[in-house]
Length: 142
Image 1 (cartoon, rainbow, N blue to C red):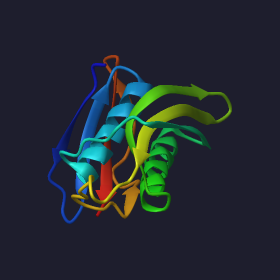
Image 2: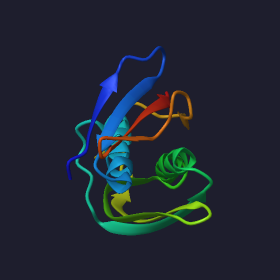
Image 3: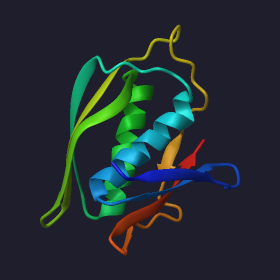
């Protein structure tokens, strides 16, 4: 995987700029950034799999919904995504994402929460393709 992300200064929130060769890689590194914000330095086991299917009208909405789903799994279901096993993004009439996440149940004695993300926002988000690379900016409301 050749994608990368970096944290950038943003007033009162956390912003990330991400770049990758494919949309799947862009979504995967965005998930890595989400995980680093919340669980910096934690070891998360790949003990269980969860399948996620999402349909949205545009790629930006698809990315926000995907990251919101990771956040929901953690906050409501007490489950942490360690990595992404498979991901496929297609566009028909709508944008569709199918993925298999691997992770484990949250264990407060093993997993230290660095920050909690309240929401993934659409603020300044636009997925662009330039020179064969996909890029975006994601602002996490903390």
